[in-house]
Image (cartoon, rainbow, N blue to C red; front, side, top):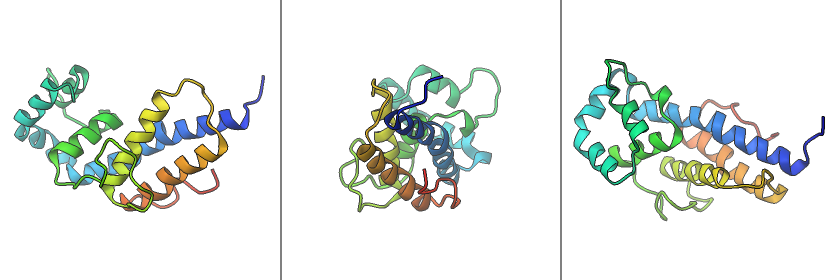
Length: 166
C-alpha cells in the first residue's frame, strides 16, 4: 500500500476536522441555542420564516424533512448537518454576523461565535469544492489554526478535543 504524501495527510486531517469534529462542536453550540427538549416547538414557532428560507432555496427538501418529519418523529439536532445548523443559527437566533458577513472568512482577530460559524462554513465549502485531495503545509497550518484554536474555545467546547499537535 502506498503511503500518503504530507499534502494528502493534510487533506485527510482537514477533512476529519471539518466532517467529524467541527459538527460535534457546532452541535454543542446549537443545542445551547435550541434546547433539545423544545427544538420541535421552536421550529414550529418559526414555521413561516423557515418556509420562506425553503422558498429561497436556503433550506432544501431533505433538510425540510428533518425539520418537519412527515411521520410522528422526534426532531433531533443529531440528524442536522453543518449547513442546516448554521442556517438555523443565522436565521433564528440573535447572533450578530461577523464584520464581513457569514459568507466570508472572518479576520483572525475576530473571535466570536458568529465568526466561528463563518469559519466552519467557509472551510467546509472550501474542502467540499476542492478537487485535488491535497493541501499545502502553509495553507493547512493557516486553516487549522483558524478553525481548531478558535471555535473550540469561543463556542465553549471541552478543551482537548483538538490539539495543536495535529
